Amino acid sequence: MSRLSNSVFSVSPAALLSGASTFDIFHRTSGVCVGTERLRRGLYAPFPVIGHPGQGAVTLVWGFAAVREAAAAGLETLNCIGIPDSHASALEIALEFEQRPGEFSPAEQYALWRLLKAAEPVASDVVTRIGSLLGSSGAAFQARMRRFESLPNAVRQAVLNESIDLKTAERCRALPEECLLRLSEPSYRDAGLSFSNTRQLLTLLREIWLRDGLAPADCLMLLDGALADSDPVAYLRRRRYPELVKREQRFEELRRETTAGSGVELSAPPYFEGDSFELRCRFSSRAELIRRRDALLEIEDRFDEFLELL
Image 1 (cartoon, rainbow, N blue to C red):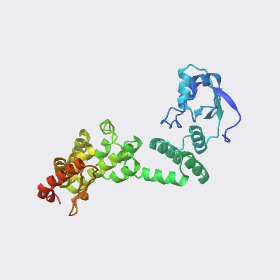
Image 2: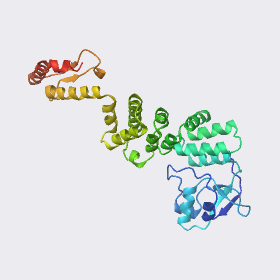
Image 3: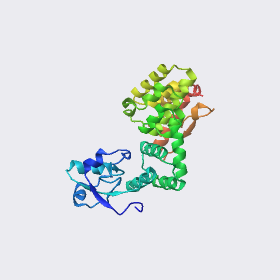
Image 4: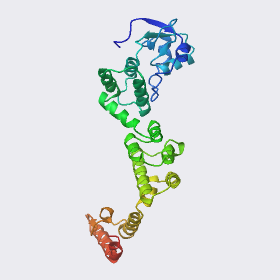
């Protein structure tokens, strides 16, 4: 920590927590807690602060979770060290203390970005170092934050809540605001959708909304209906591709009725856009060969039903 001064002094946890919470932006992990016994014995690096007791308010820069831990344990003072009164330098030091490049949440990155923008002009080499501490580069960090700033408020909030990722947010930004606001509500998060499933869900919702010219209220009703279903993506897929889904369901019925347990693998062309089905099978005994043959005879008997799907 080369930018720290050599002057260590004591400050009470209460005084540290009563100061400005400007830099209290790291919340993803509890790893920043030092441990009560280490705090009691002073076995920790001094907490970086801006200011000095007796010379105005002291602003804690890093270690809020540990200081709260110390306050709960009843410790009277903590060792602190003064750093330059510069937002950029303070953020760089805080990131060095965090020591988790590549693991900062969107909310943490955006809070850091806003602090940087509100501060004095920041030198490019500082931005480069901060980008490195975040696990990328200064240019990549700035580009990502500018993309983030361009989002409508409702969908940006969904990214901050980690309901959706940035790529999905950019794809679904044109959805009605009512739907975008729903993405940050418990009913959406409780659905337990992965980022991949979320991307599929919102892509389908957007396509249906545009194709059918839905009113915002109807689009929201459709989203809520999907979230209430056991398989939200499949729910919207049936609405988006009704004929294709019917064909898929009918094909599955025919396949079960003709080949189940026979060892014959039967597949249809993608999206049923083609003129042939594919059969695959292996056998190593006469009994297995007979089961395969019987399945082929079943398929032959119902050939017209298969053909209708193409």
